[in-house]
Amino acid sequence: MKSIQWNRYLIIWYAIILHWIQGTLLVLDDSAGLVTSTSHVREWLNTSSDGLGLLYITVGSFAALSLLLLPRFSVFRIIVLLPQQFFLILAAIGASIAILNSQFADGVIRSQYFIGADQIPIVIATILHTFALLDVRLEMFWAMLRRK
Amino acid sequence: LISTHQPWILWYAIAMHLCWGTSMLMLEPHPLYFGTRWFLLNGGYQIWGIILLVGAFLALIGMFVPSPIHKLYFLIPQQGVLIIGMIGAIVMWYQDLAPQTIVVLGLGYLIPIALCHTLAILDHCGIIHSLKISFIAHKLHSAK
Image (cartoon, chains in turn green, red):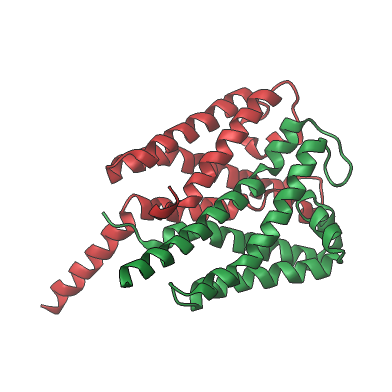
């Protein structure tokens, strides 16, 4: 039974949808910038909620264009996916800081288990998004070897 | 592991449920906000922790079972738990006292996960492949 190739891209699509939702909310409502997963990123990039929202929508759109339009074995496909990986890593670092400090970005203090349970999805998504990118990269590598 | 076109979203759900299940067992004495997404069993943290862990372990077995139909049996409990989570997120959107933006940012991701997980199961268990073959066979048959 041969699986359809897009299955492994679903985690990338998930990240795209997440960035679009987060981006739209950040543009619509400034209070979205106070949520733990976005607060640290906003602080590090020194940008407003609107700015970060637009950035999220842009990187999500780049990733979607990469999957939809760029050829399967093109290096540009990876390059255009990298900004999304970068923003996921920033969000994951922010989430990890919250877990380690036992404190949400808005100052609420909870146990590490509690914050861990709340913030772990973004950390796992970042790790598996990396794996999916490596998967795409390896596919290109194997295809190149086969051609030789 | 990486070079075999893994359905990463299924691994994502497994890892998440393992973490959530463990956390729920640890959090049991403290009925905190995190558990509210599992609104169907109000306050039953330990039971939900065990359900999440069982769903994740069954899905983990399902990833290594060769038969597509058995894969489906093992992955369905996790899909069920995700759908409950998704319904919980939607209910929270209407019921929670927190601003709706915060609720969507906090819980909204459960909806794309449940949808992507459904697609991944359909593909991973060969259902989409079978449907495509039936469709092509039907086309060929009609052409004759």
